[in-house]
Amino acid sequence: MNVITTVADMIAARERLPRPLGLVPTMGYLHEGHMTLARCARRDCRSVIASIFVNPTQFGPNEDFAAYPRDMERDLAMLTNEGVDIVFAPTVEEMYPQGFSTYVNVEKVTDVLEGARRPGHFRGVATVVTKLFTVIRPDRSYFGQKDGQQVAVIKRMTADLALGTEIVVVPTVREPDGLAMSSRNVYLTPAERAAAPVLYRALCRARDMHKDGIRDANALRAEVTRMIVAEPLATLDYVSVADAATLQELEAVDRPAMISLACRFGRARLIDNVVIGQG
Ligand code: AMP
Image 1 (tube, protein in one colour):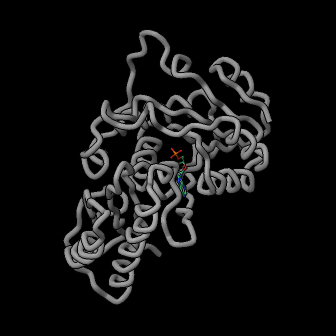
Image 2 (tube, protein in one colour; image 1 turned 90 degrees about the vertical axis):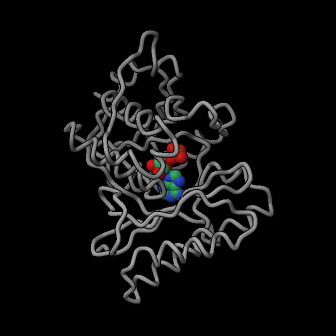
């Protein structure tokens, strides 16, 4: 496995790779969720590149950019194991050279949910992903359903700007008790870790209600809210039942929808979602 740290070397290397070429963008501190994306790419593509870059522009001034967990050595060993061909791990200066002043703004779908609570977050995500697509030119790019709004934003942006890569969405990988895997789970104390599976339990309850024929979105929001506020260690930020593509809130669940939430447990802000009414 080859580790590349400069844009110039990455552009030269991409030209030599057999196609199709798959890209797995990450911020590192890898877990089984990331590994599943890499495995899907390995299965589908002749060449696989994983990127590791903690992207400063997608963190707000009071967020955890400096504290974000990092372990490059362990990450490289894991990716070698998965048969990844190249790891692109640029420095901040390499991705944002002096004078950098071009950003990608995806409108509307970024106005709600995480976009509303984390101003500038999706501008940072859209900008860095566009740059990765431009430098690497992948045929397929792999993203996790775990970050449901990110998937909607990247799909919108890729279609709007004809970025020429297929977006492959991989189902959320969970711990045995249902907690969605996340690099930020390391922030949880043992008591918070024990309480956190309530998020997925609540989402599953709402999904079951929908399966039982309940179409009133407010009833689903109310049940998820009720279950989570009953957990003393949880501070609920939002519960949403929204159109799966536009993320506009629904009154009636009459189309594919995403039930999503954000919740704080101590230092950790966790997000999770399930998709309902699809297929
Ligand atoms: P991150 O390193 O957190 O930026 O995540 C990199 C990619 O891995 C994103 O596409 C995430 O959606 C995806 N990902 C993170 N956690 C999971 C998970 N538990 N299951 C599936 N994909 C995930």
